[in-house]
Structure formats: structure tokens, C-alpha cells
Length: 314
Image (cartoon, rainbow, N blue to C red; front, side, top):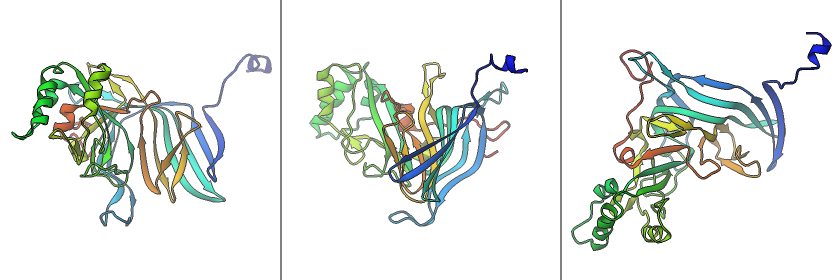
């Protein structure tokens, strides 16, 4: 093209470099203005394997066997790709020393699979389901009249109501556990809600909160190992993705690092020293991962991620 033709063309490089400074650190980010579709398998994703105070010896910050992004269909031969929009790589510096590396995604959508042994980070989950199902999971003792009354309301008056609860990484006592967690569930003090219900409905539900991984004799904490696949992004009733998760990143740091929030530049995400995975709530408050109460109690089967006989480990 000659100069006159070039003068009529506008555009932007798909790679650009930005810098930042905050909380005593300097940052350099390489932004890739591309859309990526991938289906990948990793036999073992183990990051941050070192002795950590208060944690079992020989464990790692993130430890997932047969990790995979995306899924496949052996019958049709089709690949259900994991979709990434606007990925970036960011370095954090203290003086001339690199103290953190972050791989982030502007948007992420698709299936994340694996045999999860340990997880460190911020994982946001929304649980949902009908009162009729929740009532079947309430195992009230014969003498617990409060539980029995609540079960009658949930399975009767509110049988067709859509209940919701927020979940995150926890320990076996229901305390928040962002480091090498093996469980996910409702943190102590968390309550159920009926998003479309009245103020009175939610006032009643607010009288009961999860404590020590139990709410009205219902289990509220579950082993991560039960979940072979997590959907990243929102699925519709036909199990088709209709929206992506935002603010997802994986980082490694030699000290605690405040990474700038991708969804709100005035806020920061505190990543603990070591390996850290961030699958947060979107700016509208919805979680990056949505699962039903049935899936919470019974687990989620792994999606097929390998063509041929095995569904994992290829």
C-alpha cells in the first residue's frame, strides 16, 4: 500500500504494552487483543509446592490431576472449546526484582475439568434450586421442631420457589479457607435467599444461617473432589453458555501482591504469596460458576476431554 492508501486505514496492534504503579509495586502488562478457542489437557497441574505453615507437608497451593479446558464429543467428533477473550500477561516488580506474574483473561467461558486435590485463591459459586428439592435434604431430628417447621415451609409453601446461596472455598468447619482448600461451600453465617421473593420471605430465611457446615440439618460444605467439571460462565436451561466470566486470572508471587481488579480499576485483588487462582464474582454480583443444589450434594460428573476410550488423562 502506498502512503495515500495507508492514510485511509485505522487500526490497533493486537499486542500492546501498559504500565502501572500501586501499593509500592510497579507493573508491566502485555495485552493480547485476540480471541482464543482452545481444548487442552494437562496430566498434572501442580503450582506452589513447598512447605507452608499450617498446611499438610508435601501439598501444593494448586494441585489438580487431569486438568482440562474445554470438552469433546466422541459421538459427533466435535470440540466444545474453552473461549478466552483479551488475554494478558502481567509482571509485578519491587525495585528491579520480579515478585509476581499474572496470566489473566478479559473474559473466560467454557468447561474447566480436573481431579481437584487442593485449591488456593478466590472461587465464587452460586448455588440454585427449588425448595421442593432442598426439603428432601433436610434431615431433621425427631425432636427438632424448628427444623421440622422450616422443612414443612420449604417443601410446602416454598416448594416451587427458586432458592439461591453463595459458596466459596471453606474448611470442614465452614470457615473461609483460601489456602490449599479441599472443600467448597457456604461460609459460617451465610444464609439462603429467594431472589424473586418478598422482603418477608428473605427475612424468614435470614433467621437461619450456615454454621459448622450445616444449615437446618442440611450439609453446606462439600469436597472439591466431588466435582469433575465446573462450568465457567452462565449456562441456560439447554446447557448452552450465554455469558462469560470476567476477571479470571492465575498468578504466582513471591510475596502478597495487590493485583488491580480487571472489572473495577479502582479496586485490587489480594493474591497471597505462592500460586493463586481467581474466579471471582462479576461486577453485577453474579458468580463465575453456577451449579444446582443437586450438583452440590451429588457432585458433577466430568465432561469428556479426550477422544477415544478414556475421558481424561490423554
